[in-house]
Length: 369
Ligand code: F6P
Image (cartoon, rainbow, N blue to C red):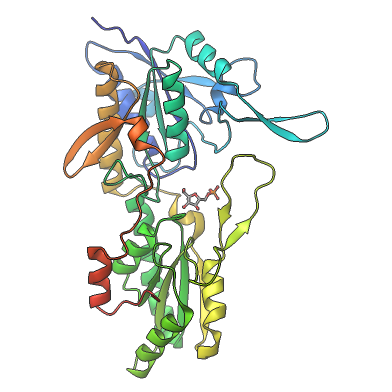
């Protein structure tokens, strides 16, 4: 018996290439064949459910309406880091912002919309909310996304490959100009507190030094590495710096404090500038580049499209099986699922003595540590 007649889909947290591919796969899997169910898209993550509007912000999603979105970056549903139903920011008459638990409103609106299940596509924070809603009775399936690739319950998340691809292309471009001018290029990439993007992009893009959060660097060690390169005839240097990289005797670099949005994460930024400043005594002409949101925008790679499509289809399989409070994942070559409780709050970091690092060191890449 088909007990699922109507489902909701939302995308939460920062956007990421491949979100639309998941939405498309969910809609196609849900509406193809005899068990066809209605799919409702919820706008702007959980904010579309719990926002101050008199009604939830939703729109019907059909296979026809999803045509052409496979290759489109971003999310057609919109997304936000705000809107946590368990800590919803509410402005007080005096202008102060306090957080309130509006999860009852969230659950009531899920019921009012007649949603038999909710597919939540998001990173760690969004999936933690999904799990908390499941504990309160919502039929939730999670789909992991993040360019940072730092979720431990899945080998890889979509968006990561695209981010690395963009960073590698940037390095290829930086290399030719660095060679022409005998310069050092210091490029900062995203990744938050994990060094996956920096490590993969650095390796694939021919970086000479890679600084990652998991291996706090020592400026003297990094400088000596670059000096050795220069002494051996290298006329240019490419240094990739993860935004979460920090010196052994120093602090993380933050771009700004977030005051207006309680619960929001502090924004990292400035790590490359710190490194470039520290290397000034070397006397090498240096330029820095912060790659920023270029890594998140634009069309997903074929690998991310495939991963996102498979995750979307697998999420629908869980819905059909009424297997809720779970997250889809990839382990090796198998698409599976894990309890959301085991998936959230477990960061996957680069192993400082792992194979990739050892291999990188063996081909002469410096880590400043
Ligand atoms: O988690 C994804 C990510 O792109 C991080 O790599 C980065 O630190 C952060 O989000 C940037 O967030 P925002 O889009 O809010 O500036």
